[in-house]
Amino acid sequence: MELNRRTVIAGAAAAGLAASTLGGTAQAASSAARPSPGREKPVKELFGRLPDGTQVHRWSLANGGTRMKVLSYGGIVQSLEIPDRHGRYANVSLGLDTLDAYVESSPYFGALIGRYGNRIGKGRFTLDGTTYQLSVNDGDNSLHGGAQGFDKHVWDVEPFAEGPDVGLRLYRTSPDGEMGYPGTLRVKVTYTLTRHGEWRIDYEATTDRPTVVNLTSHVYWNLAGEGSGTVEDHELMIAASRYTPTDPGLIPTGELARVAGTPFDFRRAKPIGQDLRAGHPQQVQAKGYDHNWVLDKGVTTRPEPIATLRDPRSGRTLKIATDQPGLQFYSGNFLDGTLTGTGGRTYRQGDALCLETQHFPDSPNHAHFPSTVLRPGRTYRTTTIHSFGVR
Ligand code: GLA
Image (cartoon, rainbow, N blue to C red):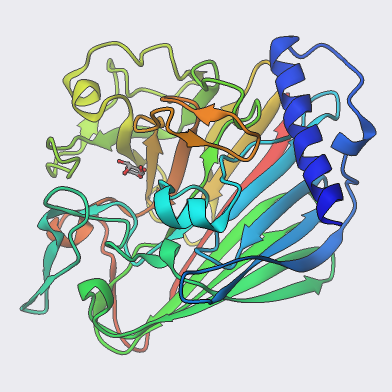
């Protein structure tokens, strides 16, 4: 069983590489690289043990042509496989082979992020007259929930197969005061694979004290296949006329700046590499793109399309819809060739990008940003849908 799985992953990675070196021409891929597009209920296996002995499981599921593997540790998407225009599968999400590697050195590959996606300046905010000091883990600032964020905890996972869908429900209760955040936060995240092969994420949370919350998912995408090289030729569209410039610590200054006439203009799809070296001070400071785009649609009651990504070589496309007001586009600037991924290849700068749907970074310290406050009696609910295709 384990051997078969490895063969499938290796085959898929090889098919992804073949697609990139052959410029997407039709080449016979081994049948092992071609998972059934059918619906496969979640199956669990032991993935590893944390230093304290806690078991971590890996779940495999498939539907509508999309296959994924998810860890109970951090809700991590270890792999996500989709076909190219010739039906050849590749794993388009960066990941690591072992639990130890995730624990020791993962830069949030595929992980669930909480309690607060991206940065809070000085790890400090004031709510209802009380100032809270959070765990500081990124220079002076708090990043992705602090030193032990949701990405570093084991979640309770419940599989489901309902109607045409399959998926996983992930549960975690974050105790009052965890990483400095007020309130006991009860969180439920649902990963659904629909019969059309979409990956839908529904987040829910409640609290027993006023708090702030901003959950997201930190998949690193490379639609040509993880480990196949740079994503600079991927074409990206973001439906946003403004973005939030940052200070050197990547904390928003509070300004909502226009993208028009700058490298930050992705309103029409363009290759990521096109303006990546334009030398805009905001790019130099961030080592590339690492900013929050202010989505034109704002906060919406339902998910609306806000971004598309396309790899011209394989034809694979990703469309993202969300109800959130912001999108963090991070161009993999900190990948430095020191990590080896699931396909056995190292990840270098720009070998993937993240598109994190969320509220704006540091919102608790900017009254004019959409609010991230959650109060007792209310339920935080948000949805993001990833749709895959070829074009
Ligand atoms: C986010 C941030 C980046 C970086 C990565 C993780 O996307 O915006 O600055 O911290 O996470 O390496």
